[in-house]
Image 1 (cartoon, rainbow, N blue to C red):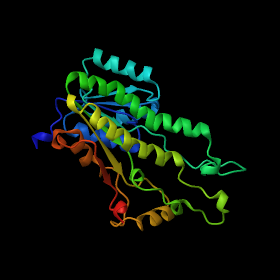
Image 2: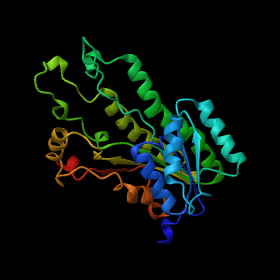
Image 3: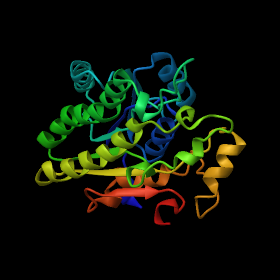
Length: 273
């Protein structure tokens, strides 16, 4: 079990105020790591930080407001951490835009035919370019210091296409049906390509990179959607938000020291059907 010990490591998590970002933070705190929570949403970040702060971890948990789409901002945060004696050993690229169905009075803009270029650019800038920029800044420093871990949070939709039947609404014409937007699949597939690239780029300098692809997490979705989705999952249920902690602990610690460039899919078996 000593291979899981992170008491001498500093981890930085992007998108840390989100549903899974909080769980990733808990997972690494449980192994003794110093954890820096980052997010562009300052109020959400402070709320998440305050909820996790306790007497056992008050010297091991920090937060920084950070925009992953800005290399200058990332570099400033990195500089502040280094000045404070915190060299990042583990980076979890978790930040993403969760694309919602966007409806106006004329067209369903989640559909490919109507998808807005501004939404495409913004979502890729955060979910994919942001992961590259954070890896560029923090990964470069890891390589200079002789090692580290990069973990990209992808999705089961990194290995198969969205089943748009999950989002179908009765009574709507085909061209008005909401869908999972194209950006989500492109970003998550792109993260796997980034993972493979980074896995070989600094391997000789002790930096390894893997991806974790979670399946659907239950978070109060409607009964109709949950029923449709669970019928596609051999385990017949969605994941609980805390069920990915063990995988994060494994991938970020020396327990996975010889794992590099892999995409760990945890989706209840959906992707093997």
